[in-house]
Every structure is written in structure tokens, then in C-alpha cells.
Length: 398
Image (tube, rainbow, N blue to C red; front, side):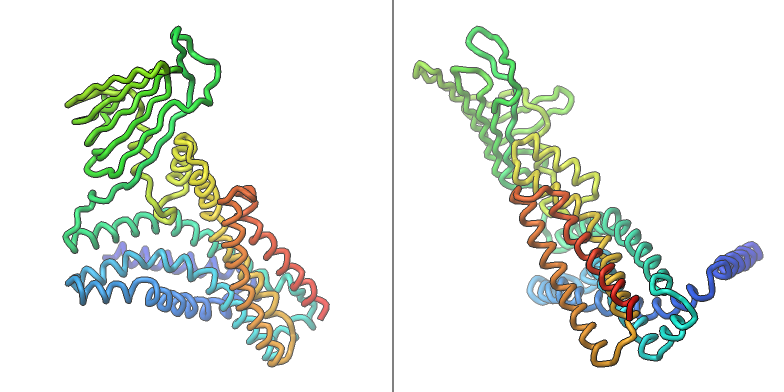
């Protein structure tokens, strides 16, 4: 007990010393920024939760008999995903309200009269924006994927659905490599399409309703159809059950082989691809990079491009905290009248809408291959930061 009291005293003294090392002007400005930011986080999160999941949970309680305590647990598990969406908006509202209030009370004018530049005034907001950016990235990369997965499993278990019953649907995997000619000579090119694998379902580690087309031998095509198949990790091959193998030669000869069990060396690619989450929000950055590699190996260029864009968005979503913090600060530090301040707030709201609209449009161009994925994801961020710097420069002249 004495140890706990001593630890608390040491902790309080350390925090006090840390805060005392922060310049007085920064402590004062942070004190103005934190209350509206915390209020905004609560408000935006409550609204997004209501629209995003609360109504759906109420419907499941009424129609499907979802227990109330399970609904509360799912709501709590989904909370991190909505927090990361609230953080950037909260930075905008906090900087607008805090600096707008100081401007209307002529406190910013007093600071400027003492020779304090606008860049120095918004410095605490920039630091807070960077902190919120790091916090958003940490939440989005580690906490959100895990909590979303647990929430989904909790919901399915409570409603009596098998968690593994929908692991994957319509799995398509293509393999490229060298082909073998009739004299068993291997071609020099590694870019030939050699295999196409398709399964309608992936459940309980089994592929169901499988079709495998083999183009690896020049002059011969093999089509395998099976009720199901599984991957043997020890032998690094597939075992297919209850199917037929059709072999077609260039000469027109066709032969059939019916089988109860057939072993085929293809690799684990189809199985790994089936386990990729359909929503990139349920992945960490590392998982998204692995998914992009799998899609690329499978020859699914569209999904690979989409995943490359989503990987970059894992970083640009947190960066929106800096974007909105700078925009809010740029408008807030302007010593202007109430009517102009209202106009500035309206313009900021339009900028938020414009920012997300531009992000969506740019991401779509990246997925389609018109823009480079990195450019598609980061262009709205750099354009918005440039605009906020321009606005801040104009505010310094007022």
C-alpha cells in the first residue's frame, strides 16, 4: 500500500516537472485546445456510432433476439473504428473553437501586439495534431482490425452462425511461370499463364466446388473438377476429392479420369488468398502488404492496385489530423469579425466535405490504374496542407 502511494507521488511529481518544462504560452494554448477536442471526439463518435452500427444492433435485438449484453459488447468492440474517424474532425473543431474564441476576445490580438507570430501561436495545435496522427495510426493499425474481428465473431456466435462458414467465396487464383513443350523442354519465359484455380466456397479449411485448369504443358490442357479439396502443408500439395480430370490434346484426343482422391502440386496460394479479409479496414499494414502480394501473384491486378491504394490510406487517414488541424488553425488565428468567422467555419465544413470527396475520387483513379497508388492516396493530403499554408500566410498579413 505504501509502495502504491509512493509510486503515485513520484508519478505526480514527474508530470508536474514535465508540464513545468513546457513554455507558459504553450500550456495556455493547449489548455484552450483540449476541452473542445475532447468534446468533439465524444460528439462525433456518438453520432457516427448511432448512424454506423447502433440502429443495426437494435434491429438485430428486435428481429433476431440478439442478447442486450452481447449488443453492448459488440458496440464497445466497434468503438475504436469510429474513434479513428472522429479524431481528424475533432482536430478541426478544436482548433476552430479554441482559436476562434481567442480571436473574438482579442487575446490573439494581444499576443500579436507583443510580437508573437501566427506560426508560434499555432505551434501547440501542430504538436497536438502530430500526436493525434500517431494515436490514430496506432488505433487503426493494431486495435481496429483486432476489435472488428472479435466483434464479428461475437455477433455470429451469439446468432448461431458458424464462424468458419463464410471464410471465403469465389476464390480465383492464377499462377504464372514457365511452360513445358512436347520434348519436355522448359520455356525461358516466366510470364506464361500456367494455372487457373477457382473454388466457389472455402469452409473449414476445405475448398468446395473446385475447378483447376492446367496450361503448364504446351499442346495439352488439363481441367480438373472436384467436389472439394484441401491443402496438405506437410507435403506442400493439394488433395482433391470426388472429381474428374479431363485431358485435351492439340490433336483433338480427349481422355477422362474419374477419381476419389487426386494429389496435385500447386502451392498454398489459393488457400492464403481465401483467408484475406474482404475489407482492408480489418487488416494491419503488414497484412495488407501480404494481401497485395497474394493478389499480384494470383494475377488479379485490379485487386492488387486496390490493395496498394488501401495500404497508403492506412497512413493518409491519420495524416488528416494534421490537415484539419492546420486548416482550423489557419481560419481561427485570423482577427476577423463574427460574421466573417461564421463564414470561415462554413468554408471549413465545405473543405472537409471537399477533402473526403477529393480523397474518394483520387482513390478511385488509383484503383483503376489511372493514377499511381501512392499519388492517388497522398495527393489530397499535400494539396490540403498547401492550401492551409497559403491561408496561414494570408492570416499573417492581417
